[in-house]
Image (cartoon, helix red, strand yellow):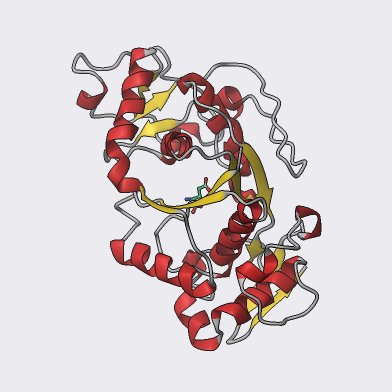
Length: 305
Ligand code: GLU
C-alpha cells in the first residue's frame, strides 16, 4: 500500500521558514516512497485564522515548489467533525467541563509544559438536549492507563495521556471543535498513514492515539522532526514576526530558499538552488539533522545548531 501523508498548517499567519521546512519534510517523506500527500488547511479557529492567509499559504507553498494530491479545507468538514462528537456522545465519552486554566494552575505539569487537567468533571452528564445543547466546553473521556508509543525516529512518546495530559477538550466554549479531535478525524478521513510534523506537537501524539482508539480509526505512523527556533529557544513562530514568506519571497527564489533549507538540515552538501523535486531521489531520514536549528533573519537567512 502506498503511503499517504499530510501537511496541516494552521492558517493563522504567513508561512515562515519553519512552515516551509515542515511542509518540505512531510512532502519528501511520502514523495520519496511514491505516495500521496494532502495539504490540509487547519482553519477552524475563527479567532486566529483568516481566509486570506489560507490563500497565501497555498501560493507560498507552490512558490516554494511543493504540489499536493488534494487540498482539504478543514472548515468544510464540520459534518464529519460533528459525527465524531455524536459517536463520542453515544459511547458515553463526552462530558461538560467549564474548569478554567486557573483551576489547573499549580497542579500537575503536563508533558507539553502546560498544566494537566485532573479529569475533575468526569461523570458529569450532558444536558438533556445532548452535546449540541451544551453551553459549556466538552471533553472526551480517554481510556485510563499507560500507552507505549515510540515514533519512527525513536522519539519516546509513551504516556498515560488521560492522567498526564488529562481528557482533552473536544468542543470549545465558542463552538469550535478542538484540534485534538479534528486532527484525528481528518487524518482518518484522508486515509493518512504517515504523520510527519514538528517535535513541538509530539506531546499530543498519545492523546491523539487514545482518541483514535475510542473512535475505532487506525493509528498512522508518527515521525517528529527538528524545529527551527529563535535565538531564545522558542519555536520560530509567526508570533515573533520572524521571516514571513512575503519578505523571503522578496529576497529569494523558491529554489534558492529550498536549497538553503536543504543544506541547513543535511539534505544537500551546499547552497545550490534545488527544488523539492530535486531532493526526492536521495531523500533519507538518516540524513536529516535531528537537533533544532537556531534561525535568524536580518535580510539573509542563517542557521546554527
Ligand atoms: N495545525 C498544526 C500546526 O500548524 C499542526 C497539526 C499537526 O500537524 O498535527 O501547528
